[in-house]
Image (cartoon, rainbow, N blue to C red):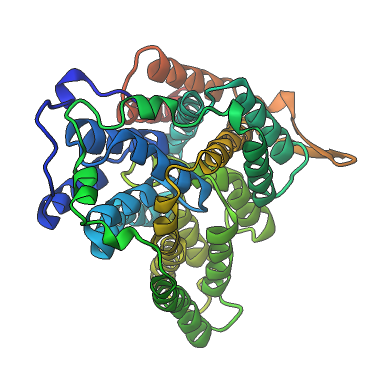
Length: 463
């Protein structure tokens, strides 16, 4: 977890309660500033909500984060929804979660349309050449930051390594890896040492957090689980999830690209865990290899778009949905179909995120003191690090080499780049981006801008 600068903290006591309007302003601020992927977004929320405002204490923040790491979907958006729900019930969770997504959704929609219409222009292609090289450095930085936070013991480091081998070489499904990590975390819970850092300073420098004061005042009754409440959540969210899919089926037919997108991304919303970095390798396999909607290079372009915008990186799926519908519009307007594809993708991606929080968070709150659960969640987070390492390798090979072959040796699958296709300019730009991020500590936006500019110069002038 990134530490806040001294100027970011305040010694004033946490308020006993926060009005919905005041919280809404903070959630909008977080949504507009949430650059840098899940690691940066989680650090931003920690700085704003734990260190600066003391709305939530460290122990509860980390407990909620580990639960969100367990869920399929973007953990940072789900964490915002969780904390918003704690403070202001369902409307607080909805506002926090939507505010986290809406700014990025609008920006990615605009950039996707520009990409679809202008990609053939030499300048646009040149800019994306530089962006793809920088994205590799961004993914590696995320791997380092999340790894430092999650891999506190040798046991957790071993779990991360096993997860990488399982997903990269053996191609085991991620849900199976999650179940295995949870089981190992339960068995080896004395080696995970969960929550030790959090329990030492649970309330922060300003005493009890706002949420703890609300709990003592009896204002967290909504966090108590009940079967009736769970049934209501399912009765509302499941039809909301399915409604646009049914409409697309009726209007455009079962073979429409919109229905295929709805099915693919609904399935991803259920079976893919670990946030954007964990899901992208599977998305790339499906969108590039199975459906032929995009090329591997265009997937990297989409990730570059998502990296440059606020909001969760999973919004790269919006880019995929737009491009797929734009290219397979049939007799309909490509621009209309692109818009519908983007809306369909975002809907079936994020409606389940609210379902998981509103359905499961009350039960997770009752288990906050469970050492066994904390150990299992910590083990799953460690496994996610191994999956992110797999994504880093996949992207690195496709950025640096023009051709990557896949070979199978029994149950083992290998990705073998063709050495003659190594792009020295891409290698140089990636190395420069790594130096700017790791050594110079330059911000993400500046790093991407420099890489895009240099990429344009290389493509248009030197080549």
